[in-house]
Image 1 (cartoon, helix red, strand yellow):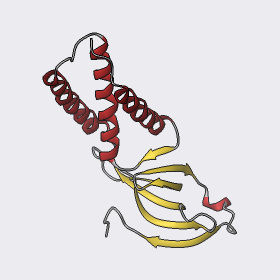
Image 2 (cartoon, helix red, strand yellow; image 1 turned 45 degrees about the vertical axis):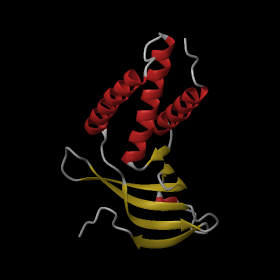
Image 3 (cartoon, one colour; image 1 turned 45 degrees about the horizontal axis):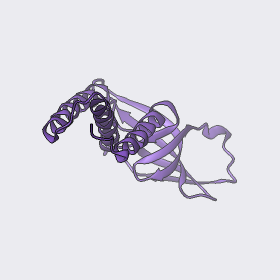
Length: 159
């Protein structure tokens, strides 16, 4: 029996941790491609771990076949469950002490519905594709810590 490569276990732990954080906390992956990337690696590394434990997936051909099946299943899951990306229309405020913190007005166009969902959130950017979001009430905002910007980004390209 081949021993399990420890890097597969590390890939599984990291990718499943990011997927669970995205699902159950205020951590948010703001790009569907990155979300799909982590979902694919979590699922495929789990299948490889289970397959090698039960002495299946011993050949490169079987592993590639499993990857293709997982890729198709993850693609179908993403197509039917992804609601759309939140896009920043206006950066309302920027934090004076930490420029990585902003308060944004965002819209999301749902794929199978008409219209847009709206939200005002505080965002702390962790990486270009990862952020920590919190709901914010701008009526009770401490104006000494925030600079008003009203910077129109229009990421949805609305007229």
